[in-house]
Length: 295
Ligand code: GLU
Image 1: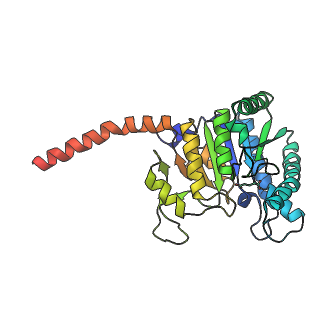
Image 2 (image 1 turned 180 degrees about the horizontal axis):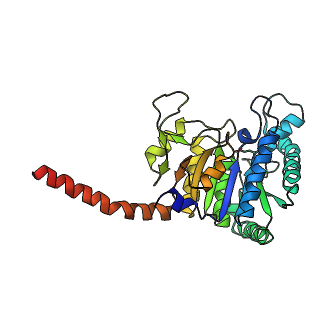
């Protein structure tokens, strides 16, 4: 089983884009050219008959800029207000771009309760199912204006985790997290030139989690640790997950075509199939080593 076998026939795909993927680092303004390319890629996937869900960050950043703030919001209430201003603006731009191709979109804002409370989860799932039937592209974000840590229903805190929960909710078969780095390295490649790139991850063990703790990725909320957390949720729920570099938005196409880009986290099912595939080869290797020892 290679990447192509795993990725070519994906049907229901959740794609998460972080603030760093859709805005300019220097100004925090939306990178319209890139967003337009992203929307075209999504519509093309729709044209191929795939179902896509976008999990998009950017509400806080867009709101901050619209309000003329030259720093990140400091307090919870400032962040909430920025998100409330920015979310509408962000959706307006998405709507405009999707509209050019006659593709309907829907805004779905979730709180942590939407996935932890059984009744809310059922309602959210029902909405997504109906939107799929209606061939609408849902654009999801956390409802930052009302979800704060202090409230009893808590918050996701980052959109990597949110995207993983959305994948689980809709039984997606692939989750793509667009990051500002190529994928997972053994160490931070910006600090350690000997850091090695990891192409495929099977079972997520303690050592991998510890490794990710040190490595930062996005300039947004999610670092590598949140991506590993997301991978654990998504892969346990049956989805494969890829971290790919959002600096090249076309890497989404490469991922879908089974090219060796990004880090692939195998779903539990694929982990099992992979280990069954390699088990006889390992056994043969051990037998061969024993025979050579005897000679
Ligand atoms: N929900 C936040 C926003 O839209 C971003 C959270 C994240 O990027 O992880 O601005």
